[in-house]
Length: 200
Image (cartoon, rainbow, N blue to C red; front, side, top):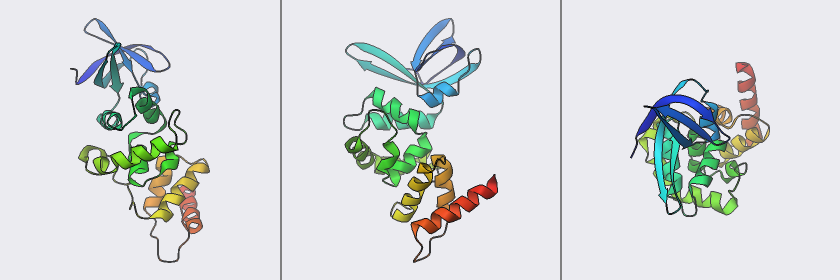
């Protein structure tokens, strides 16, 4: 129905933005990441998704095409509705979600409200091939998508994330580490910590 709406941000709630365009105020349900990127009084362009159900017609807004693409993919997963999809995109940026799915990292979903272990595993199972075949998503996440078979790197990313490092930053650091035979997860973590400390 709508590809995007460009207008002035006239209001914000905990999970929505009011965007005024052409004299009409559109209420768009958004993720926390999109909400944080919008300031009242500024002109903002949001890509939209119109969701119709028996009791309501809902309009969703996204700050990027990648976020919208991820939202649509999540809706295709069994048992995942708009509310859960937005919760996931509030906790994980599109590139982080792509990494978690491609590397089968169910732990990345632990901080998502309303998503348990079984749902996380189902998301990974149903979306892995779809995400790997999506040029838009993969083109915007090339430097953090790593070999899905490399369990050592997956473990290192999870460990760094648990230490308080941003998920994307940890994934980028791990993805450039060469892992010779015999290297342990602890060795990768130490190399990454040195690398990230040198950048600061």
